[in-house]
Image (cartoon, rainbow, N blue to C red):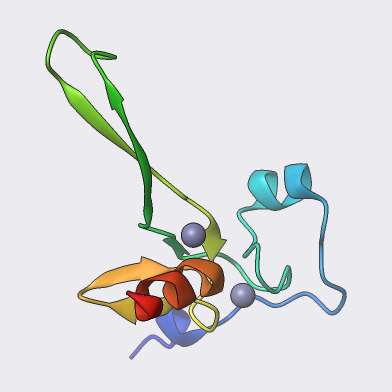
Length: 88
Ligand SMILES: [Zn+2]
Ligand SMILES: [Zn+2]
């Protein structure tokens, strides 16, 4: 049986360069591990972008790895937005 799914790619030194993180798909929270999730927190709504009456929800989209994501209702949230949701 393959163990590939359980393998976590991890860097010794965190990458804090946003462009590099985006390029390599690195978690924004720790800067060390490959991001597997994106924050689903809805930051706003944009109207009529894709035609009249069409509403597009924009989400935080912060890259998150398995260890930094916060699961809630089958969605993933960054630390900041998870705290935000808990306050409600
Ligand atoms: Zn992380
Ligand atoms: Zn977020």
